Amino acid sequence: MSTRRQVTALPFLTSLTVAALVAAGCSSTSSTSGTGDLSSEAVTTSTSSDPTTTETATPDDTTPEDTGAATDGDGSGQGSGVSGADSAGDPLFPGVGNGGYDVLDYQLDLRVERPTVSGVASLTIVPTQPLDTFNLDLIGLDVDTVTVAGEPTNFEHSGRELSIDPAADLAPATEVIVVVEYHGNPVPIDDPAGPAALGWYTEPAGTFVVAEPTGAATWFPCNDHPTDKATFEFRVTVPSDEVAVASGVLADTVDNGDGTSTWVWQMADPMATYLASVVTGEFELIEEPPIGETQVRHVVPAGQGDRLGPILARQRPMLELFAQRFGPYPFDSHGSAVVESNLGFAALENQTLSIYDAQFMGVFVPDEFTDRVMAHELSHQWFGDAVSVATWGDIWLNEGFATWSEYYWVEQSGVDPWVGPSPNLGPLVDLAAPNLFDENVYVRGGFTLEALRRTVGDDVFFEILQTWVERHSGSVASTSDFLDLVQELAGDTPTQLVEEWLNAPQMPALPPR
Ligand code: ARG
Ligand code: ZN
Image 1 (tube, rainbow, N blue to C red):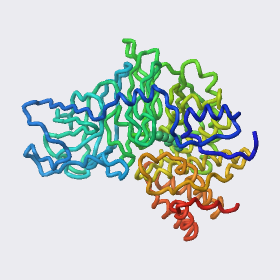
Image 2 (image 1 turned 60 degrees about the horizontal axis):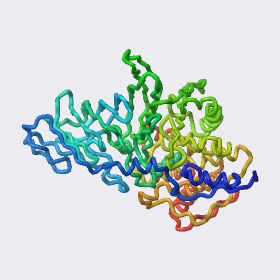
Image 3 (image 1 turned 120 degrees about the vertical axis):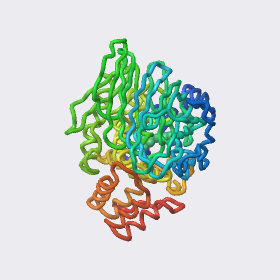
């Protein structure tokens, strides 16, 4: 292997690219833009989804049907509240998320009998305005009942919107519990940002979740936008010979005495809906010694622990290095889920439980490529998960930072990763939904940070990254927040340099070291 080879960002490489990489004797990767050979599995699942299906239900059919949350629904004749918006207002995904309240916590009680899921979701919400009606996002599942503050409540479910019409207006700034009972066979939706399928996957051997950016609503009712992060508890019931792993730490396992067990996982730090993860089925749970206070567990296909355990353990020195450079690892647990399925990309940074397409974990892929994928996903725990994007158009703050981290890891092994990529990678602003995960977002994004690093030096550069995480962990931040921080800690010239890297039609040249 040559020591000066071009390094491209891996995680959006496809299974087609894996084949190319193997055929090329592993000396370089071609970096297609995330299109390519997708498993018929993923495509079939995706096309069978129908988010436009309309389902309505009113527990009390003497009550006239509410006309929906988009209107200033005072149809019940009560209250002076207004409807919560049926969108979080993200310019790239207008129909996604909702307004009028914040979710503080999700308690998700799921019984998984492949392919069926029966769920009870209890959301603690705080209205940010007087609310006559409000919406949750939920796609394609049947809603059985909704209660608000313990009272059975009218609702309407159409497309992505579950509109809830409590008997009385909800008061602002007062916590209220919303409980949704639902069931069905969750099906992924088409990926608005690529050829993949997003949401809850059901495979012969198990289920798992791949939801970035808008697929969480395929498996639980939620405010499906990163601006509304919340804590989570997952109570997942599966046959006793299967496992259930979720984001967070294992709080309990209960043998229900009826051939099923319930696994309870708690995520005590705020999490964006798209990063919530549940994996069930014929898997092995691998526990590693903690790293400091951080619990470490992985979940891999049954029988593969001996092979995959040592590969996944190679993340330990990465985590230690990143914690030194970016600040403490942001969560109580760390780990990975490996699944035998074509995801359409290598991996996704689910909070505390990044998910990997098994095709990228050894066997046909050389160790250093697997390590780069793992370094990339691990760094997302700081950049993407602890600090999430304020809008999806800020995605370079996730992918550029993770690509920079991936290259930084490569640098540690004595390989120079900063060898010129194609100079015509386009700007990082004004992206459209289909281009969120294009090569420029990753590679030009990563080079943008490297240009900043070379301009301000390592000390100031890492001070910027650490302050970024310190200030915004548990919340969201935007590109202009980043520019403000660079201005604050490094002044005018570096700020202008970053602006140039973000905006210039042509990718600028990397400053010399
Ligand atoms: N965030 C993932 C990664 O780079 C890639 C997700 C691609 N998502 C998609 N919907 N195509 O680690
Ligand atoms: Zn990434």
